[in-house]
Length: 114
Image (cartoon, rainbow, N blue to C red; front, side, top):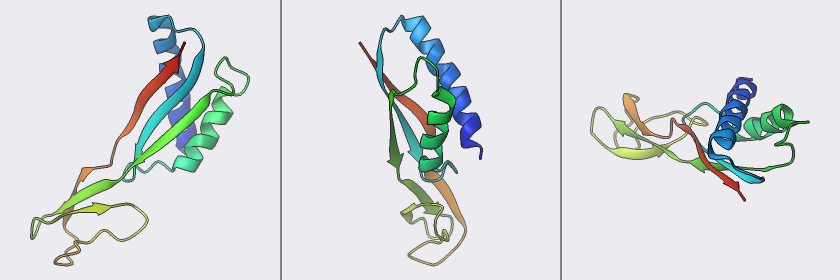
């Protein structure tokens, strides 16, 4: 479960931002997860709870926004939405030769604090 390592790194990043920006009380942390990132949102949420347990961020709201991925067919040029839960094939020509366009990112979007 690589989500645990991701959350550990994210905790360090958030702590650094809190220190650098001299933020007081953190209320919410929002991340964006692309459907082609290989990150499972429910696992990420569970891992966040585990890495923040007993820390200053324990209990802070953790919001995950899923961003749909898109790909383009290398044969016909069609662009279409995709995710990793099904075979990725062009809906127009059926080709499996596709290239991802969006949805591979995992981004710390926002730290809401007072």
